Image (cartoon, rainbow, N blue to C red; front, side):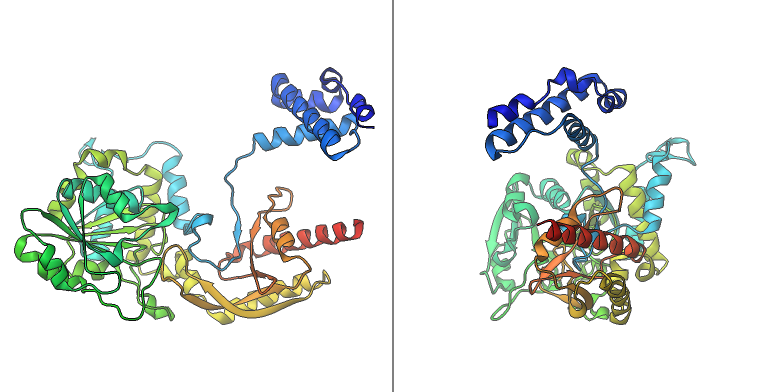
Length: 470
């Protein structure tokens, strides 16, 4: 039977002559179309030999080739709807940008800009001035520098200020961040010498004092536990205590905050997350943080602190390799201006999500429930938690009201929701909890509600049709 089915398969020459294939040639070119047709035939042969399938007709083969061509020329990076409830979702691009930040990117990317041009003097300028002034005004730092992410910021500081010299750090802070990057590895790459002090759970000022040698010690480094917590019998010196220890010996203290924030998280029922201004006020000579986590801006590494140290960083050769482009600076500047105007809670999506009242979330979840209930699927509004995510406030969640769909196979429905479908809208990323599919309105932007409902209805319809055919 397999051989007879294989003989039914047409030649590429016959397929290329069909009307549908000729349309593909006009759109994609003859060579690319031929390659896609050969691929469709190869796949059909494999299905016949391995799965004992029947041979598809000519039109089906050409349609498969068309899908292959469309997929090859479609972008692999596209928007999704985040209905997981994880606010700073690393896998989904972390912080969504504010409308003002998006507009700023579009404005400077349309043509030329004054990225490194001093309009007043008509001469070369510095790209860093577009964010440095705003960062210093918002944090109290003497100067600031922006690179492409926080890992780059840490690497640059250690390379420029501590190469071939000692950096003191508590053993409890030798952390691993996303993607398997570890503080000891970053330090080794920079050329700085790692000097561990204290123990995993308890480190004291005298541990640093015993390891400090003015001629050899370049920095005291404190790394914030941004993606985990240590509880129980624990102790760490305060930042101010480390600053007081280093000052008589002119040893600066570097504070790596990781996520970084300008707003007190306790205001919204969360544990306190150290803010950038607090670190500057405590006397840290260098503070590093991310621009795309709790700051709510584009991916960037922020370096703030003493003017003389920032000046050394600005002129280090590595800075050019780590510099940011005009679109990042435009988005960051727009984000910082929102903070300066005191409008972060109203305009920056991350903070709008954190500050969203549970009553508002419940109202939106009930709206979804009314729209989806007509599909004949049991749906309820449940109380659950929204993680902050993104290496911020480990283990902490905000109370939320989410829509729970009680379906036979929540994982199958979740997979259907993830499928990109340009005809119907944007893929929806959900989460599974207690064997139910959950959709959390906290992280779904309100303007995406109608699209989310359409995508859920389409996925449920496809599931019902599949069940019926089976």
